Amino acid sequence: MRAKLWMRFAPFLSKRYISTCRTSPLPPSSSSSVIQPWLFIGLGNPGEKYQSTRHNVGFDMIDAFAESQGISLTTHHFKALFGEGVVDGVPVLLAKPQTYINLSGESAGALAAYYKLPLHRVIVAYDDTDLPCGVLRLQPRGGYGRHNGLSG
Image (cartoon, rainbow, N blue to C red; front, side, top):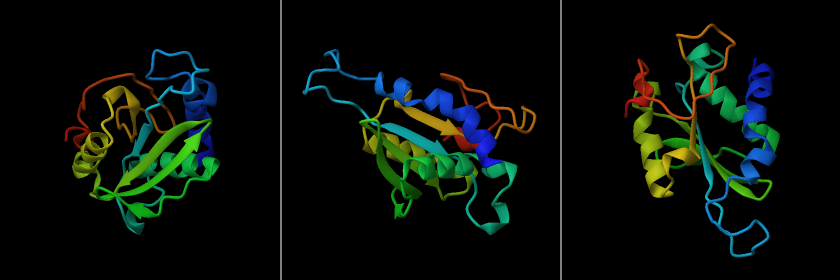
């Protein structure tokens, strides 16, 4: 299941796409160019009971991305399993909130605030019961709909 999800998500997170998203108006060749990190948050529930269930697809996405980039998720930071890395020169922050899915906003909001990230630098992966299993939808913005984990 992880491989299928990663194959659908990978083009959106391609190195070419990530490396062109700079926050400085200076040309990429400038050494003073500062690149804001991306914060990837995968929603799910902690514990063996929920492992490999549809409800934990966000955790699975983060695990697959972390593994493919050699990033370990061994730190606890703002109620989340957390890892940091660099992909093609761009810093990435990975988080799996351990608060249970309906309270994940406590962790996600605190991380985004701590790193002073605008919302367009935050990507959240989660299950959507309105979609058939195995279907991935990418949205540039949106509300929480019926997903309590996004309402915080």
